Image (cartoon, rainbow, N blue to C red; front, top):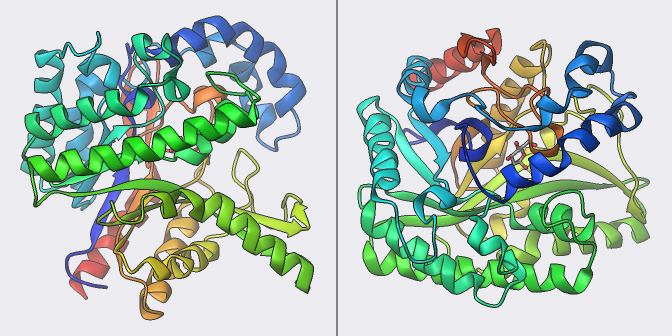
Length: 409
Ligand code: BGC
């Protein structure tokens, strides 16, 4: 693999920091009881259910609260990451901390993230900083969030402030998975702001695309050398049976889900961030897929799909960075295999001409999995939420030795 490849892992602020006060924390307070009640109906079919039932039916599971206390424990977490041989760390800054009131910036919060950036560098890791990973300050939620009239302008102001205040950041991830956010928050209504409205969904998507473009230009004006892109969920759609109609349907799914947003920001990106988790069979429509090994969330584990998704993005002629890929695997049964196969998939994509510059496992430490709460365990590092103790999972050591091996090649 190329010498300057980034070997990383990712997290996001709300999922690990603890003590956030934003639209999600308020949504959790309002919905924790309901989610705990619904869990037995919605999740009892999961193979891991007997092991997680107590947690999943407890409302506390659905309140992010102290989370993994990464806000305070990050020096230790970064040290563990560096000890594994990672040379990059992706994390997000929390908009509600940085801009608690419209246009009023909290310099102490900014200083906190400046220290994180410095600590990552000190530990030999390149910081990749995400500006927005799903959460909104309450003042923006109250103005309609992403479908409100001025969301993109507000985001531009925030992005400019970040670029000015953190000039040492070289890699910015502007938005995380806008399509997933809009799908779950505006079409399915499972996430805040709980809409099921295609018109609002379209408006939110357009604002997000405009927010990305404005932020990109602001970053480049402040620091021309910075590299910026967004992270996009990419699903590998697989025609089954592979007949003409299903191929056509896959092209449509691929266009709408994987490429529509990227096309909207085509000129305003230095790289494309790829988040890969899902392999879906398409028989006219997405028809689900539970063949083969599965994660604790019963997502089919198909690392080969990463190669195909990367190959599909070659058309943009941009560097590609796998900004997330991982699995919920409490007992660490599949993680080592999954990481090994994902790296092999990347190598094959590179051989096929895709310019892949990095791989970030999701996630560095166990975290709060949005409306599923704490029970799904994605971390290379296990967190005991009672004591906040960290423990390396065996797969972390496997990832570490793969990095050492490949860096020596
Ligand atoms: C998101 C993460 C999430 C992960 C696993 C991605 O869609 O960016 O926040 O934890 O998937 O579901």
